[in-house]
Length: 267
Length: 263
Image (tube, rainbow over all chains, first blue to last red; front, side, top):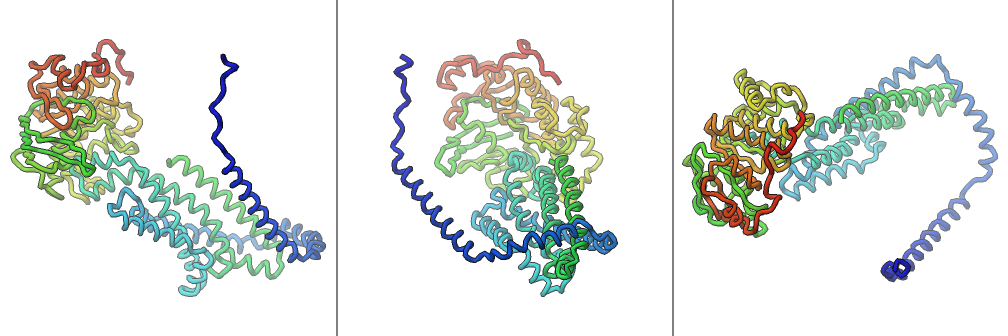
């Protein structure tokens, strides 16, 4: 009996198979076209010199100029402050926008979608472009950097906050409504206790990202260590650049470590 | 006193939740509403504090037609009508005392409540009510550290803290095991007798309804198909309400044949 057992016949897959083959062919053609274009433009003589140049630069990177430590340390501190100030602006600003973009907090779907779009719009701005705009409008320096971080981080935080708010237990809200609480009381007693730890956790996570982001902002003059990186690289002062890179790596690692420890305890 | 006069409710999707309900519930009664799920028990209970709004008729709570209430006057009604839920609906991350004192929200100004500036009387009231349900040892525990039965007791304390004249309980024991269910029902019963609070409970367990109710109202398809004191109720009555023979699942079982919950 068991020998006669057969699964029901498979549905005819020919159309699907043909479609997959066509997709694979199209992709192959695109890749071929792209790589053949690139290969034509490569300056092969460059590779010959590459080893030699690396040999000159890399050892000097690993021989950091410790005598510059104080200057570098100050600028890294400034970079951290830029990230901190920017994330703080974003974390606070994102709260009302998070509520605006949360489906379960806004009755009118059109108004709610508008909130979501606003946050998407904010996220489409590249950091460096925004930094250039701020450097022009408020002048070069840390303040421009902080505003940049604030405005770019706020789009992402707003979206994450909105998702947190959408995932809360609305039954608690119902219970508060049923005992006669008004909207603001419901916000403080039913919603905030549910969302604040996660808000904080996301803000910390964003702070980690912002530390890295603010190290490059100086490239366009928005304060922090970036300006020094540009100058050092232009001067081919590889020892100092080595120090900067090592310091950034260490600082980022320490902050990531601490913040992930805190976040684990929060949620 | 609660009076339903020709109350009907049609949901936006066309479902008829309530059909021409006419009933009066007197001060201090312990009423249990029985019926299968979808019979309109929840809709009935939630009409009384306007968590849902009937579409026609009159609903008088202490001689006031509550169907027209809005905003502030609606919130005032809700401070008088406390509600207990199947899933307790506590704030998991908040402490027991904070959950309990949130019963005072309707009586407390917005600013005072935001900054946690409750009067000494309010705090005493919250603590006393926790004592009444034997939860005073867990005052500072987080709500999610408690068992289901304990959470439901906290939610009873929360309701008591709002000084209600009516308590509505929507399937308060449906998520609990038999011994805990009896414990929770006993607390509700005791509060009803001691404070003379009108109590309306939705249940679908026949034996529990018989044990705790003064009066039983049976519902089917949004209509009241039985209304009378417990003494008039027999298994036949339930078969008539449910429109089918009684099954095992309609019974919760008694306290004795289960080991009591470890707490």
